[in-house]
Image 1 (cartoon, rainbow, N blue to C red):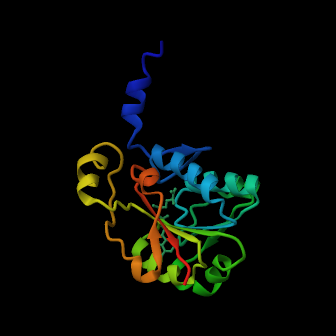
Image 2: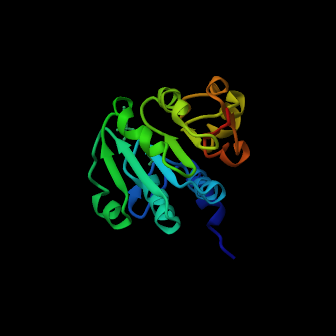
Amino acid sequence: MIQDAPEYYEYNTRDTVVHYGLRSGQNQTAMLAMSILLDIIKPKNIIEFGTGTGGLSVLIGIWSKLNGANFRTYDNNDQRLYAEIFNKLGIEFICCDVHALHGDIIPHIQQPGVSLVLCDDGNKHQELEEYAPHLKPYDYIMMHDYSRDLDAYNSRIKPKYWDWHESSEFAGTQLGLTPVYERLLEYAVWGCFRKEQG
Ligand SMILES: C[S@@+](CC[C@H](N)C(=O)[O-])C[C@H]1O[C@@H](n2cnc3c(N)ncnc32)[C@H](O)[C@@H]1O
């Protein structure tokens, strides 16, 4: 009988996960949910806005290498912790202000195949509004620290799973976006939106 398992999981539910030696800005639920989501939507082009210390990038990088996806991660601060592991996995890191680099990022989104854009830096709403118009039909854009239901966030998620909340507004209708996979992502505190046709 494993005596310490419940306490272990109780203790760790809010902690950010360290992945292959690199800390992420994600709880355990988010790492698992992201892995499941990648297997469901099978993106061909993936962009992460906000590399941070690289923990989530490693998960996406491994998935991309195994599945032949193009993956780029952007941050305006190069922490250099991840250079060796990024090189091994072929992860492309670009140091820039994502709000000032439309000309480089948009062609990457518009390559053939499903694109997935992860907004996880300083101003996630601004990124979503800037880049959603450039998605192709059936591409996806995601926003971290998002809970559609603020009451649910305050009562169930904040006390136990995640202490950051940036948005409950779904401003996507005008941008042709539909929220998807809400149950999968609720405790991961991510919103995922699919671009609809036309
Ligand atoms: C929360 S961390 C990212 C966490 C990472 N996605 C993960 O899950 O491990 C946010 C990052 O966004 C970066 N950032 C903030 N504003 C930015 C901007 N305008 N352009 C590029 N990166 C930015 C910060 O330097 C910081 O490293």
